[in-house]
Amino acid sequence: MVAIELIGGLGNQMFQYATARALALSRHEKLVLDNQLFTHYALHDYGLNHFNIDCAFLEKDKSVVEPLRILEKVKAILSRKKIYHPYIEQDLTYDKELFEFSYKNIFLKGYFQTEKYFIRFENQLRRDFEIISPLKKETTEILELINAENSVSLHIRRGDYVSNPEANAVHGTCDLNYYHKAIEIIKKEIENPVFFIFSDDIDWAKENLKINSITHFVDFNDASTNYEDLKLMSNCKHNIIANSSFSWWGAWLNSYKSKIVIAPSKWFKTDIHNCKDIIPESWLKI
Image (cartoon, rainbow, N blue to C red; front, side):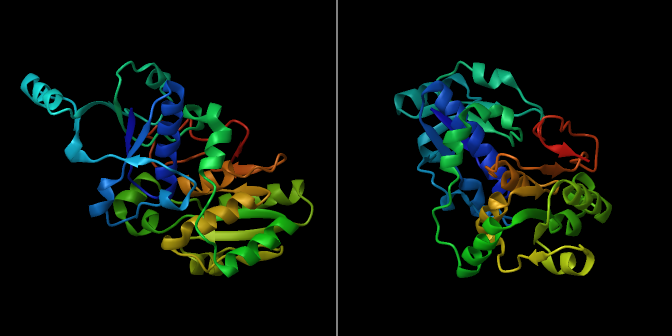
């Protein structure tokens, strides 16, 4: 049995699910999700219910997570409770030893922000991350336009990266200079690109981002329908992402064979975190 604790925004939940799903598939074991932290989590809601995912959920009163004293283990075994052996991520670099973990039941805690954990199961994960929730009329209309053009998604992440001092100190935001450089690269490589702008602060984007090309600001989704923005981003032929796991997934799920993905070379504002494994090698970092 493989269980994982889910927390964070939709992009973080997708990284956590993808890694646990890959581990369960590699071990030929069942996957269980623990989404109980969202009961008291004010920043984001559980969002994997919008995808083609069919999983059991962990019930804490029927499970035990180590470390336990001997007496507690005995009581757990006698009551037929499962004992999960915790694997706690130490940093953001890829740890190949995760797939060598020998315990029968494993409970994962962490963010696991690298495709190295799950790339071998890419096809299965693409099926898992197909959106099954109905799309709004505005989304289907923009989707038709995206499919008809040399479409480029551009994501600007602000939100708590700006409003929350702690988040800002760690993450920071990509500045306009980054986006202007990325746009120029796209214009040199792509004929007649059409830009589709996504942001959790779309008014700021409209006021500050000036592109001398056809541009569409996608302004009809909010946190409750962010999976629809993900659908739109992943259908664009090319992607300019922010230092955001949300737009990371929009680019990763893009199946266009000749796609250009541009990502910020500095993923965090601070150098505390080692982010060398986050950006796939085929993506362009600037």
